[in-house]
Image (cartoon, rainbow, N blue to C red):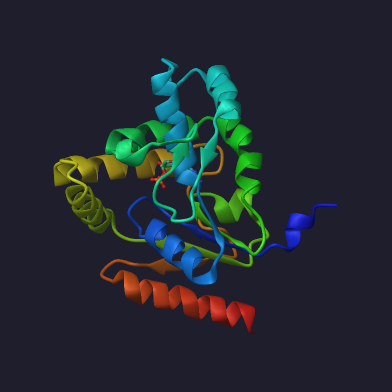
Length: 226
Ligand code: DC
């Protein structure tokens, strides 16, 4: 019997820059739930592969490496620890995102990371952020949200985020990278980026984070007290 099935999960999926990371963190903090940043798992795997000199197309080595990684998300949700060491913003660059998108397209890698992701489901609950949280990893989630926004708006947000972190990237390059990543993430054969049939799709173009957060809260309230 799988007792974790009774632990509530809220999934927030969507393309990069849709606001899902910020909304998921806010929600996890407000509810006192655990938080899974599944994109960070793929980013960490690509980053660790680079450190070990493993080619991002070498599926067998990537699967072995994924089993050896010691990954922790501390309660503040900001600094991911790899083998006990904070990796900081090294996994947040556009290059790291592109590497993550490449390893994430490999079916064997996704299979290897599936149970690791499900292990984050613990009392009192979990907010899971990613691309396939509602479709593949937690199909029985209590609430599934799919956030989206135009690629131009997402590129603008990413540009501003990176600027705040003193990471210099041009807007046009970010836009191209986002569009290339969207195409790779949507067209891959396994777990492509697509809303679950029972997900609520919210377009966040032109919306503030506060407005989107309020919308998600309202959805949750309705779901918990129908
Ligand atoms: O959310 P993010 O930008 O940190 O994700 C980085 C890459 O990882 C993204 O391009 C696609 C991949 N990814 C995925 O395939 N499945 C997930 N659940 C999360 C991320």
